[in-house]
Structures are given as C-alpha cells and as structure tokens.
Image (cartoon, rainbow, N blue to C red; front, side, top):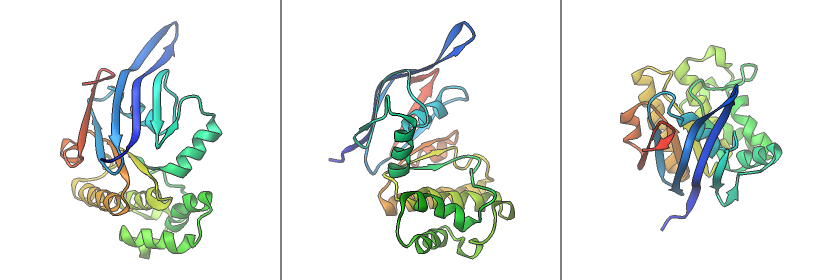
Length: 222
C-alpha cells in the first residue's frame, strides 16, 4: 500500500478584512498517497489556489494540521518552509513565472544550483530535451511562445526531482492544442519520475485524467 505524502486534518484559512473575518477554507481534511495524482476543482473564489498554497507551504493555515512527506508545515519559519520547498516540491504556475533575465537553460538550472546538485548543466539540458526545447536553451522567455515558456517551467519544476509537484491551472493561459501538449508532457514526466501530482484546474477533462478529484465549494471539500 502506498504511503501518504500529503495529509490535511481540519485545515481552515481565514483573513481579516477590516473589522470582520473572511473564512476562505473550512475544515478541509484529506490524504494523498505517494505516486498518485489528484486535482482540486471548483468555481472561481472557492479557495482552490489558497488550498494549493497551504499544501505547498507558501502560506500558513489558520487552524488544522498539514503534513508533507512526514514534515509538519504548521509553525515552520519562512526559512524552514523555503528549505522544504527546495528539497521536496516542484511548482508549475499558470503564468509560467520564468525569470525574464535568464535563458531557458538558466531558468532550469536555478533549482539545481539551489540544491547543489552535480552535473547540473547536463541534467538541465536533458530536461529541456524531454520537453522538446533543447534547441531553445539559449533563448530568453520573451523569445519563446506561451507554450514553450510553460514547457520550460515544466522542466524547471522537475529539475530538483521533487517528491510532489503542485500545478496551478497549468494550461490556463494556453490554447487547446498547446494545452494538450503540455498536459501530456506533465503526466509523462510525472509518471517517469514517480512524482506525486496535485493540480488546480477549471478543466474537467484535465481533472478526469488524475487518479482523484477533490471538489471545493464555498471553502469546503464537497
């Protein structure tokens, strides 16, 4: 039986808004087994991206517990959360989040350098080859199409060999044909590296490709 890599117990997230409190997430509990895939779906404003951010240690919950690969995220300092993200987590964002002053190769090298991995350049070039962009390694983001930028971000996300990959609307800014290419690359890389995948999407066809769907409505797990 696969071990649990992500566990949430009674997780809540609230924000202060003037003299009132806004509850964004309420009493969320679920487990995700290592090596599986899951999608978080729901209408705009339902708390999907907030939930993904909590799971990835980008923000802290107001209540409840979050465990990622045996590490309790609640109460960790920003430095320790950054170390957890660098060691265990990969990210793919809707708007690519590439560093504009770095080439495609240099963007992929960033997590490898942070982790101090050997043979960094060869590893980065191999990942670019896997997403079909080895010949674009010296190009800057402004010289790449949206689909090419997202493929670079996929290569970067898998560079540090993450235990779990979080993807927030990974095809949201792409046309249907390019989105399908990126989807296929995402699942192929995920399967070949044995990574756990958790994604947020409005695309129910994409969600249906994951092992499990977690519907969020009004801040609660439906």
